[in-house]
Length: 213
Image 1 (spheres, helix red, strand yellow):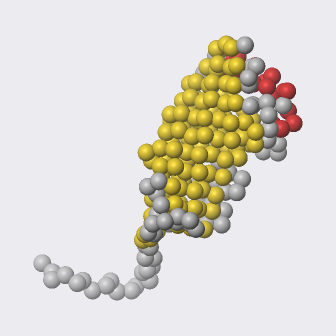
Image 2 (image 1 turned 180 degrees about the vertical axis):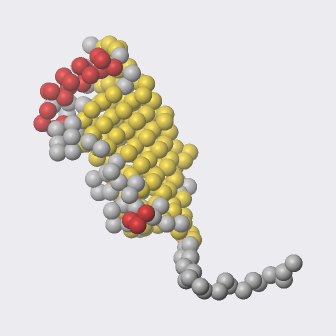
Image 3 (image 1 turned 120 degrees about the horizontal axis):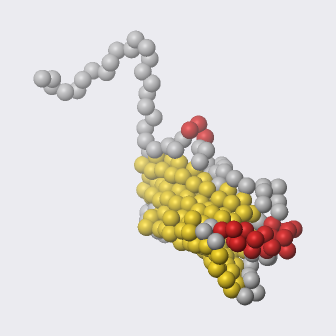
């Protein structure tokens, strides 16, 4: 059975799907919710195509895109593909890309793979206000573990310090960086930003090294 519909019909379709799989889709972080302009569902094969302002929400986490496809919604593990204008946000991270795939496990985002030219990552709540961000052709994000793996033309920055290599693995919660982990070849390039020296009140200004006017 296949049909296309507006948002109101989308809600009724997925309400039935969620009701039949209530146990795996309900968890302490909140219900899995879907929002889009149009949906085309193959209910027999549990396959769904969502178009127009797509948003998949689970608690504080969400994924937005222009278009999405989903399979196995009535199972503990569903598979998603997102295209165009992809925005992934969790309590820890913010990713933007051209496309992405994601696995939802027991009704919550388990892993996501973002791809772009490049795709972008930013830590939402870095310690002491440190800005942590990166870009790469491929960004693998393990939401449960809080680990981001960047590969393909990687640039990564932590509080102004820059890391470049074939692969950069960043543990968001521990704030640990590994560049070119075991098995990866290539050189590692790191640029450390010197800490600025705070000027004490009344201290004389440093002497000029120029010749003057």
